[in-house]
Amino acid sequence: MAKTVKSPRWGWALTGSGHFVKETLAIIKQLSDLDLFLSSAAEEVLNMYKQDLVLPEGTRIYKDRTASAAPVGNFYYGVYHTLILGPATSNTVAKCVYGISDNLATNVFAQAGKCRVPAIVFACDTAPVMDTEAPKGMVKVYPRRIDLENTERLKTFEDTTVVETIDEFERAIDARRQWLSGSSS
Image (tube, rainbow, N blue to C red; front, side, top):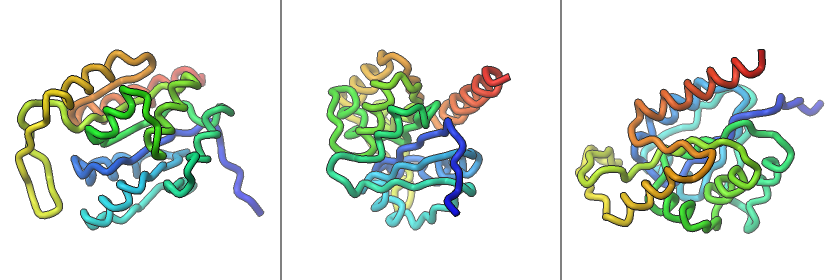
């Protein structure tokens, strides 16, 4: 017998970023009614960082296996109340800013916008100098001016909340969860 999936759900797209990937996976474990969208790069990063996906029961996983990103059709039918995109690489942020939707993560962001589904984006490249965890330990990175500018541009998108730290990320998700629970009463 097929399992009935409760709607609407959280949609979460993972990109090829290792920036706070362990902390992100811990947040994912706390959500119910979740669909996870894995870009091909996200699958590679999870492997590089030796991270197993331990997901809440009922989580559906969509992988970047179709040229047209077929799973995005669910956005048309009200399946999602929120899209979370993060951690988001500078490549993903740039594609979102310029309307390029050529992989599963950028496609779900585009469709969320077209369907007026609010999005929370955890951008990775947000300061001129940053510490981040690479597979072999902490490293210093120096985001380019264009990376910082694109993050600022994305902040101007309607129905899009862009956060820059893991603490802001958690707070934005908690605020959305509180809003959703208040609106359903």
